[in-house]
Image 1 (spheres, rainbow, N blue to C red):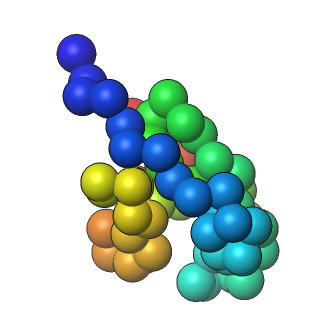
Image 2 (image 1 turned 60 degrees about the horizontal axis):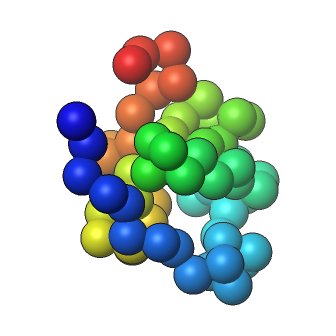
Length: 63
């Protein structure tokens, strides 16, 4: 069972974009990730802070 996610400030979600494609991100609250469909990556959110490093992102084709 996953630990509860720390909420992300909605104002922050409005300004964040994918560092690779500069496109908007979708917030997956349950998974605690920001999804870049253009890059095919899911950026993790740790302790309420998005980790926008491509090397730390999960490829969308992997669980």
